[in-house]
Image 1 (cartoon, rainbow, N blue to C red):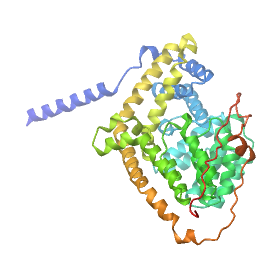
Image 2: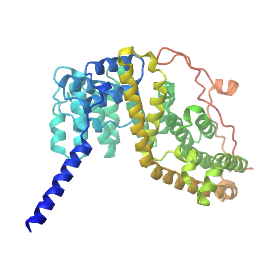
Image 3: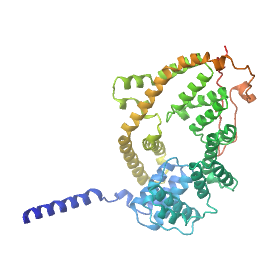
Image 4: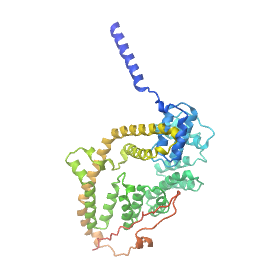
Length: 442
C-alpha cells in the first residue's frame, strides 16, 4: 500500500512539473527590452500599420506587469477600436487589472469594455461595477450601447431617439468610424421597420460616400431599392460586388437578391445569364462537393462568408493585413525594426495555426450554402416562367409606375463624387443601373 502511494505521489509530482515546464516560457531576447515596445507602438502608428499596432499592444499586456505599459496598451487598443478596427477585441479586456484615473478616453473606454465583457459572461454584478465608473452623461458609446439594447428588445422608437441624439453631439475627427456605426445601425432599424426610403437616404447620402466603402453596404442599399421596387438601381448596386473591393469575402446573398428581382420581373433571359455566371464562378467547387473531392483544394470555399465562421474570416483577414503591412517594415526606426519583425512573424504564425483549426468547419458551412443555393437557382427559370402567367400578373391594372433616376446616371452610367473624408480624392463609381424591364405583361 505504501509503495502504491509513493508511486502515485511521484506521478502527480511529475505531471505538475511537466505542466509547469509546458506552459511557462521566457520572453525572447529580441523582445525583452521594455523601453523598445512603446517606441515600436509610436512607429507603427506613424506608418499607419494598425494591425501590427494592435498585435503589439496585446503582446505588451501579455508580457509585462508594468502599469504604465498596460495603460498605454489599452489606450492604443481603445483608439484602434474607435478608429474602426473591424474585429472583436473583448479577449484583450478579460485579463485587465488596472484602475485608470485621469485620462478620459482610457478611463471610460477601459471600464466600458470591461463591463461588456462581464455582461457577455453573465457576470452582471461586475458589469454594473464597471459601468458605474463610466461617464453615463457624456460618453457617447454608453448611449450607443443603450440604443442597441433597446433595438434588441424591439423598442425601435426609443433606439432611434437615442441614436439621433448621439448624432447631434459634436464629434472629433477620430470618432468618424463611430459615427458610421451609429448611422448604419439607424439605417438597419429603419429597414426593419420597413421605412426603406429613410434607410436608403442614410446609405446614399452618407455611408457610401466614406473611405473606405464597406462592400456589405452596397448589398444593404440594394435590398432597400428592391423593396421600393427600384429594380434597376438594386441590380446596379449589386454590380459593385463584382469589383476587387468586394472579392473577399464572397457574399452569396447577392445571387439571392438578383434571383428575387428577376423572378419579380419574369426576366427569364436574365435568369439564364445568372445561372451561367454562377456556374462559371462556382461550377468546379459544386462538382467537387458532389463527387466527394477534398474541399480544402477549392479556394473559393475559403472565401464564402458565413456568419458562424467569423473567427476563421477574422484570422484570414488579419493575416492578409499583417502581410501587407510587413512590406513597410523598412520604414520603421532601426532601433525597433527587429522587434517589429518578431511581432509580425510570430503573429502571422499563430493566426495561421488558428485559421487551420477553424478552416474545416468554415469550408463545410460554405459548401453547404453553395450547394443549397445552386439547387435553388436550377429551378428558378421554371418558377420565373410560371410567374409570367400568374393570374395576379395577367389581370392587374396597367399603371404607369415611373421611377426617379439621377440624370447623370442616364447620361454617363455613373457620377463622380470628389470631396472625400481624408487627404485624397477618389473616383466613386458605385452607382450603376441594371437595365432590366418587366417581362410579366409581355
